[in-house]
Amino acid sequence: MAEKILLERNIKEACGIFGIISRDSSELARKVYFGLFALQHRGQESAGIAVSYQKDKAVYYKNMGLVNDVFKEAELELLPPTTVAVGHVRYSTTGSSNVVNAQPVVFYGKKGRMAVAHNGNVVNANQIKAQMLDKGHIFQSSIDSEVIAARINYHIKDDLVGGIVAACEEFLGAFSLLVMAEGKLVAVRDRHGLKPLIIGKTPEGEIVAASESCALDAIGAEIVRDVKPGEVLVIDENLEMQSRFLKNIEPKFCIFEYVYISRSDSVLNGVSVYEARYKCGRMLAELFKIDADLVAGVPDSALVCAKGYSDVSGIPMVDAISKNRYVGRTFIQPSQSVRENSVSLKLNAFRSNIEGKRIILIDDSIVRGTTSKKIISLLRKNGAKEIHMLVGSPIVGHPCYFGVDMQTREELVGGKITKDDICKKIGADSLNYIPLECLKIACGGGGFCAACFDGNYPDSVTDDETGKFIFE
Image (cartoon, rainbow, N blue to C red; front, side, top):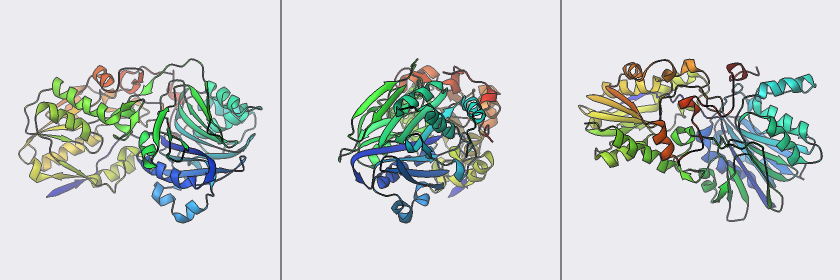
């Protein structure tokens, strides 16, 4: 017998972006649709696709909802054959959840109709917006992505790429961008490369840019390479690629992409997300030897870590929790109240597997603590004798200002109380976290932003510069 609980995942990623360019006009919007479908885990509030035609014109459609709800056959038919298209799935870390804030941002610019798709969070966007308001610019939305688009257009003189570079030199924080203009596709990463962006090639020869490699797989594309930190990569109508670079490049890739955000079948910066999570589980088994009957992972992102622990420890991994796959990722829900209302529907516990058993429960992270507390309560109600919790990341004690929606210290349980107090709060018999250095080794070594764990931010930021609703 299974008892239901709606499990809250209290971590939210900003967005997923996907772009494609070909020599010959074809129905690229459908390939963008498949790419966005593969990136759905990165944002579930809205989806949009923009296609270029005649180089300086564009048609787009965007709306609230999941990709397969926003785009039916009728909507896809609104988007004509093209040589360039970009798409976006959104979770709001800046601005409200409404259709005005959906992306791509499409606008009439100095190079005709242009489109920008953005993943990340520009922490000085408020100051840049204020400067542009003083110059008479009118904004339609409350998102930093529109500020990015406006600033790019402001800096364009004769050279599109020069305008992009000049604007991006001003931005602080995280931005992976796709810009569609002049029949070109431009892929950009901030100077730290905080957010992922990868280039692929389809069997038909089209060039693709996407947040994760799983989106390339969705359309049969092969990985070419990652866009480099600080790179402005221009792909023209002949599919020739040229690069320019921003100044002061210092790689600081978001390590939380490996912990939770990205799909386990993706490859980030040449490192398999699956392998990184599996190695974390193996390290946990070496560090924390616990006498228990079974290992259980919180679905989905902790299952690989749990397998690693089980393989090293010899303790069998058992299905203790069943996930309702018709409930969205609760870490990527737009508000705390919505997350809490969806928690009780998300997971079931299998009493026959856990009754009377000592369980090692593995999760990828503990952010606010409410999820862990509810899972442990669920397992105890279904007869678990002991619950020893292990976490495949360190204590989250510092806010993220760069595109993961945990923006205040007050909401983070690790920023307020000790590990022992967290253990008591969530109701576990014991609680241990993987050390940060071990996590870095599992994820490939170094060059990471781990500010949510250690407080070392790649760009300086103050609380009054950030906040989800700062532009409203």
